[in-house]
Length: 254
Image (cartoon, rainbow, N blue to C red; front, side, top):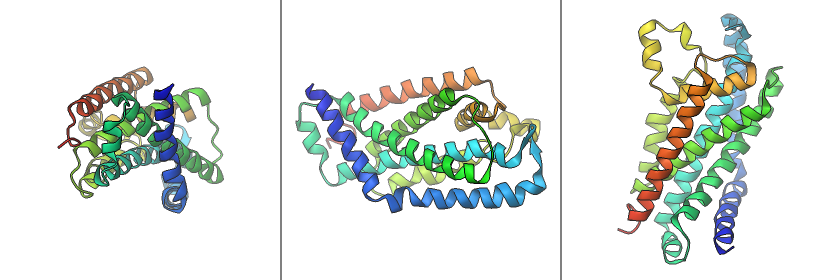
């Protein structure tokens, strides 16, 4: 019961953290998404036509939704946990009888909550621009949850190693953003030359976006079972890494 209370304390702290400053956490993705749909979906989409039998607007909707889930799940955890280190609040957690798994679960759950909330906001905006219908709601939520969990864990690991606020922006700016844009959000990899199709298969975000797109509109460039299996394997790997880092106190106890 004490561990449950500790988890809820961290989790609700994270919820209050990003809801208190909602103009900074929820409003920007709403505006950015509207611009995506207006520029790429309507203006450029009219010239592109259809992709894999779907209108261009409907085709890009799943990718844009999941891209927002990825970025906000990651950014919430990396900024929150690093701030805990920077402000020395981490010492209170270290001296408290709270297992590392509970600490990890609390922060990661906060990241998942923000990622899925932003994803819901973006989905609502998408419905204003597109008439798409979700083919499999349960599977779509499952894929969104797994993706959010994966990148919340990645954000936690980044925060553990970060020594300055600059360090928490390197991965999102130079790794996540390029991989997201190259992950098939705005195009099908079938449109690429064969060589670049093989290169694109090395992008893990490609698998998640295609799995989510399949759940929404029934179109994918990737085998869905493979995509979900790879995502779960990455989650297990990052969970073990995060717990090992907490156990050793890397970036925390020094």
